[in-house]
Length: 253
Image 1 (cartoon, one colour):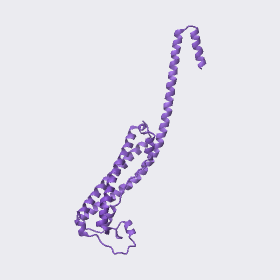
Image 2 (image 1 turned 120 degrees about the horizontal axis):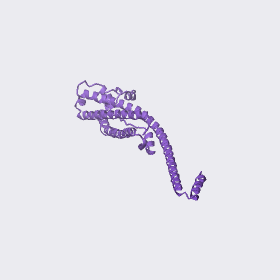
Image 3 (image 1 turned 135 degrees about the horizontal axis):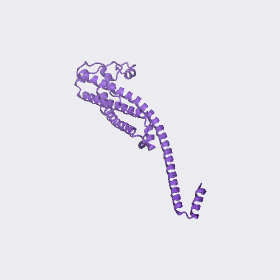
Image 4 (image 1 turned 180 degrees about the horizontal axis):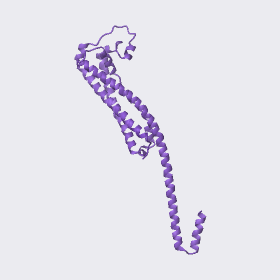
């Protein structure tokens, strides 16, 4: 093909057809440019296909991560709902809305439990390391970034809540209300642990309980922290649902 074009150029020059030669040369340049542009377009198309395949593969991992996250978040939300009831029921007894009863032992112990969300980040880490975040369509990119930003805020609240338990609530329970740790505690974990304990059971000092403003303050704080976390877990479930609904339609710009 190159020899063919060269022969045409030589014939035009031999015949001294300069005008025709220049037109031919210009046409040849245009053909070369068109060829280069087509090659670039094909290369770009191939690269885009590779990126799309990579993104779709990583989005499948992200999708599985979110499904696992949701299972964990639903359980955490259930635990927070239970804790809210414990704090609320404890305060009802302290306020004398209902009589003080043995259920207080269970409520006070359950509020000692610490919780922490541990998301599976394999998908987002792979997408980030592959520098594919900018290649996601705007709606999906926004939803993903919002979800992981919300996780950080949730973990900050968990840290505040767990620190409160470790430094204030649990030490106070151990010091002032050790009687909650007995086999008559309605929480199965405690009752099973003390099942073979032959020591006599003692009740919570009702007079002390009703006058204990420190305990009241701690219970109000625990109630607030649990409500805050319940809301965070619900927001994360909604946020992850949004991503899953978008991923279900496949990624496109």
